[in-house]
Image (cartoon, rainbow, N blue to C red):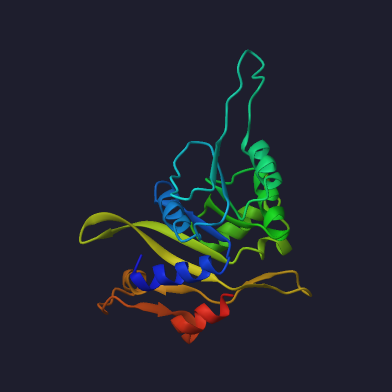
Length: 225
């Protein structure tokens, strides 16, 4: 992630945006989520929900919660992500951070975002289109009006830099819109780092952020809010 892209994240998170970090297996989604959460203002209340405790935030008003498996033959007493997320909404947090959404808890998270909470989460999908398709499918079943509540989708990939494996942010897709007549979700802009464009085009341009649709960094920041 470049300094300019980090500055963009800092700007939108300070101005109360919800972010979804997506990618394949072992691409650093939770690491990026942890880094982005550092931009949350220190006075805000945060509740995190995880399967495995991986997040580590410096905020004083941070309430971490982790699932608990059941005990006995019937698995009684288990606490799921869905249970924790329902309890998190009742605590009236400013930000709800979910380590990974994969089931019915996704609907609760998007409902919370729609009612005014801010949210961050990760998801296994390798493109913006795959993210939307997975959210709409079983077992999440998120309606399209709720999907449009997410302000930014970040796509991470595993690649090679000078012959060595590396993890990079390949796509940043802000500014969703929903066509009320057709019911479709439109991704208005995509922000692609030049290393990703070089990988696709095999060119040797210097490292500089590139924008589709001639979008500048400053106009992207203005339109993100």
